[in-house]
Amino acid sequence: MSKSVLYMSMSLDGFIAGPNDGPGNGLGDGGTRLHEWIFSGAPTEHGGVPARPHGVNGEIMDEGMATGAVLVGRRTFEHSGGWGGDHHDGVPIFVLSRNPPDAQAEDWPLVTYVTDIGDAVARAKAAAGERDVLVHGALTARLAIDAGALDELRIHLVPVLLGEGKRLFEGQGIELEPVEVLDGSGVTHLRYRVAS
Amino acid sequence: MSKSVLYMSMSLDGFIAGPNDGPGNGLGDGGTRLHEWIFSGAPTEHGGVPARPHGVNGEIMDEGMATGAVLVGRRTFEHSGGWGGDHHDGVPIFVLSRNPPDAQAEDWPLVTYVTDIGDAVARAKAAAGERDVLVHGALTARLAIDAGALDELRIHLVPVLLGEGKRLFEGQGIELEPVEVLDGSGVTHLRYRVAS
Image (cartoon, rainbow over all chains, first blue to last red; front, side, top):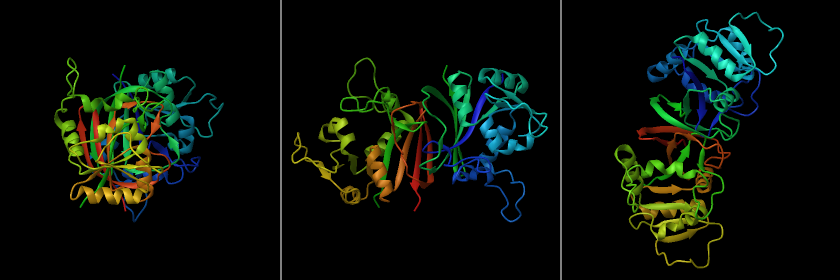
């Protein structure tokens, strides 16, 4: 059965972006540190598409890319340039927004705007079939947790204290069940089930 | 060589105590959840001294109890009743306080008050000899980090979101090096070196 799984890189002090995040600076000042593990396999000489990281980090990337739908907040979506309309492998992208635009700037057939978090999760799961739904973004995560619509959390815990920026969690009190701990190169991948 | 090592249990959202922590409520409202892993080996019928937890959690307890000195903030010290004057095995306890008391309420020969964090770490290391110094308390941790006097962090990451309370980290921006990840029962033990 499809599960909704939050995928987020987070510093040990709980930040998922540095200060001043915005369009073109999606991870905020200094926040690219949080994604270094993703690009650990990247060639530095030629630029271009980063190579898949080796070992555990590569397996975690594969896991995320094996999801059957993406659910993301509009802010994160727009800060990421909408991933050019395709996050991975042409799977549907559901964008949570209280005020969906009448028309998109781009013609992106994979993208659907949804206003209600419960509806968004249900539609994303239906679209994903047997596969999981990749949930992304701090506000979307909080809304999903508050609505009881988040099944699991996959936190990529990065060994740094940012000291300031945007936090992943704010005010949620929930119990979690550890599912898996994987020790990647320069990052610890934690997986938790939201206790029911 | 002796290292200063912070030992703290922390929720996934970064709290080391619930709200309203104080004397007699050292972990704050709901904060005892963070120490459940320590008491996982405790007999529930008879009360009394809790048994050593099994497996990895027991090994981590042993590691902390093998330290040769304790450095703690006055607030944490007093909220813990001063551990009756002996944290473990009669090792010296250094209590960081800007305004040390003229006299202690109790006659505790192991306890020394120190006003400066650098001085406190140096004296604790000297007292510990070849063994490490167990550092405890959020404010003391921050002061030690800011002074460049903290060598390592041993975080017991507890699978819960508290949502509110007292945070471990506030405003420190430092790079860490992962040293070890140990998957205990109901808790993940992370060890980091502070990058120089």
